Length: 100
Image 1 (cartoon, rainbow, N blue to C red):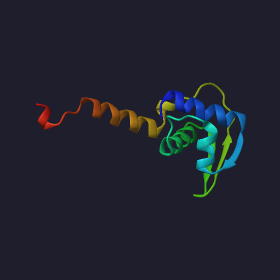
Image 2: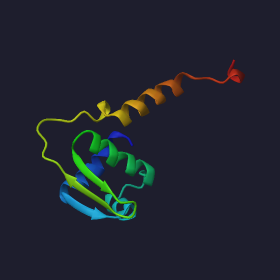
Image 3: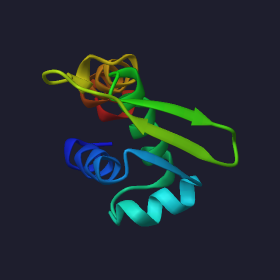
Image 4: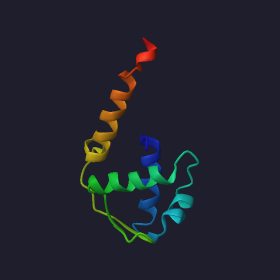
């Protein structure tokens, strides 16, 4: 998920600090046509890793609770974002042998 998508997820959760429902319900509530289910789920995990939410995923339902925040959280410093950013930078520099 990009910065704007993360912002939309977080802003929705700020309106409902103790949100419970399915991933599909959350997907429709966030209302971002550019955001897919996988990106949404990754976004939740990134927010959890940053300490902004607690997340209980039973497989059927999600329970997301907003955590008190002091200061700003660096989402790029979470393990998932470091992995995604690292792999994305390698993809940009990779060329197949056919490219010459």
